[in-house]
Amino acid sequence: MSAEDRTSNEATSDPEAARAEATAIQDGDATELDAAELDAAVSAAFEQEIAEARRKADENWDRFLRAEAELANARKAAERARNEALARLRRELLTRFLEIADNLDRASAFKEADREALLEGLDSIRREVARVFEREGVSRIEAEAAAFDPQVHDALGVVPMPGLESEQVVQVERAGYLLDGELLRPARVVVGRPPD
Image (cartoon, rainbow, N blue to C red; front, top):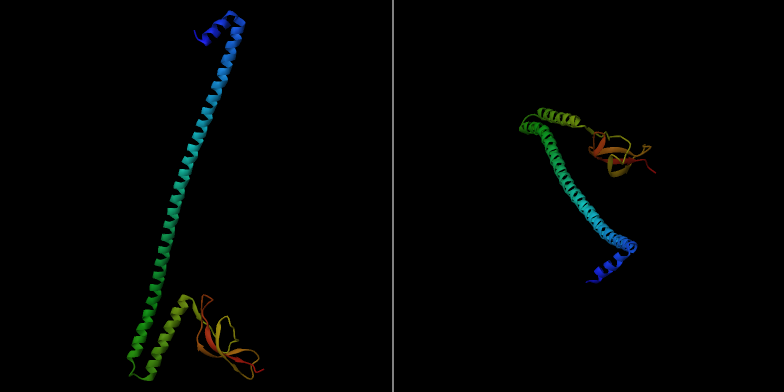
């Protein structure tokens, strides 16, 4: 007979003691079982939370990769559209200048012609260039006899000029232009300065 059986037989002789002992054993076992079950439940809950967190992290990573790919595709599409627009604008502008080139060819064919016809051809070309510039928003900077403005004039030299009250453009070496009111190219000028 084992020790447990003996203890059990001895305890059964006193019913009150046996009942108390059985309750204590059950309570102890229940506490032991409850702790083990609790540990298992906590571990399972943590594992489930970790699995859920990993799943969400994987989903977020996939979303990130998709968003990154979409952004790269959008950048490529924008770059392609920009290049196509620039090529189209360039083609349109050069097409406008082809007519000017044709007029220059016609004018050079008149080498032997009289000077009057040649000058008339050059004036025609100048007017055509002015029309193209006007359509494109290009305007000439009126620099001759204007007050010197370093924002739109590039001074090639300064000469003393009696009779001037302030610095003034006295000679334009190369015309300057504005594009839609903003500087496209400064005018190269010689500036007259009042003597000291």
